[in-house]
Image (tube, rainbow, N blue to C red; front, side, top):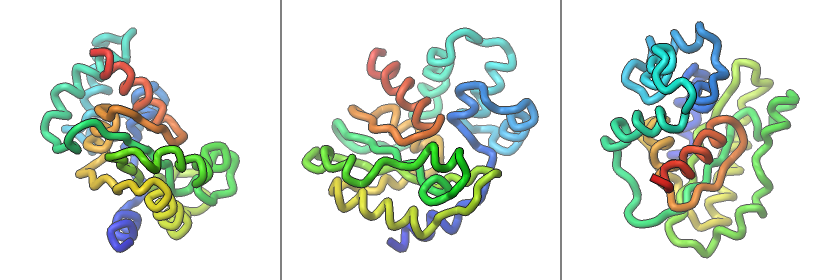
Length: 194
């Protein structure tokens, strides 16, 4: 519980939006900001390659080449594992349409993963610049309920790139809502076919 609270309190609204960047949903100004603020990141390299016209028609192939380089520096769970991504933060209790649209699944949805071995929960709160409220307390409660329901382990990632790589490498990926999860679904399938 203390780890979760520290994770949430250390979070601030930032511009590192991997899913949005992967699907080309960032403004040119946001792309420039990411490249400047996160120069050694997966997203920064991906955006630079896209701007240079590399593999412009195949996002998955380009990202796979970048992931091969970046993902090798991290540690992952041993053996096959299930990765569950929970979109938390403003979507847990915010009242704007975009927050309600991405509400997390009901806790009971995760019951089916209870008896699987090696279940890892991935969740770091996200707050849009348009968030009505951060929902920190509600997010912590939600995550703890999922941990209890699945008997899973909260994955301690170094950063967003580490979590991204770990979820892509998972034997089974259970998506949350939003473009971050949507990108992982696509890349997880691509990774398994390589």
